[in-house]
Length: 194
Image (cartoon, rainbow, N blue to C red; front, side, top):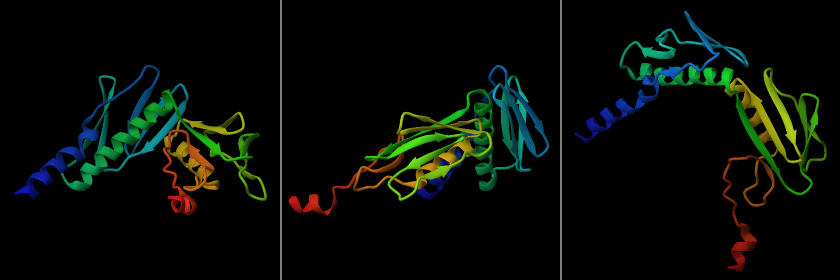
């Protein structure tokens, strides 16, 4: 009996995101075609491919995503498609930004054309360039802003920068996201003192 109740709850929650209509802001145009959605806005144009089992309609200045059946696969596609289209609408109107911080003595970042040069404790500086449509800006010596209208590309570039020197759990060194909460460990020496 409890298994049936759990399955029903899961069924209700899986498509909760998909059912929400996406409001279209002023200055944004959404064009639905077979197999894709084109979103035009002040920041540019994004094309989002669609799965054939999902329908996207524009009505009353809102985007509505519908699925073909109640199968688990269609329910998961429903929420995914709604999130991707919503990200495209937000991207062309407001854009996305991720901020990274360098922690460590002597760690610094410098702007180099479109990209960034990182001095993070290696014997050589590490140079990174952005993907198309993504902008990297350096603030001071230890803050890097990654911005663009494509959320996936912004996330990928920020992830590449962080991967150069991930935060160390024992020493407060590395590259972290500004909103990332680090769980620092005391280490063996601190444990012995107790």
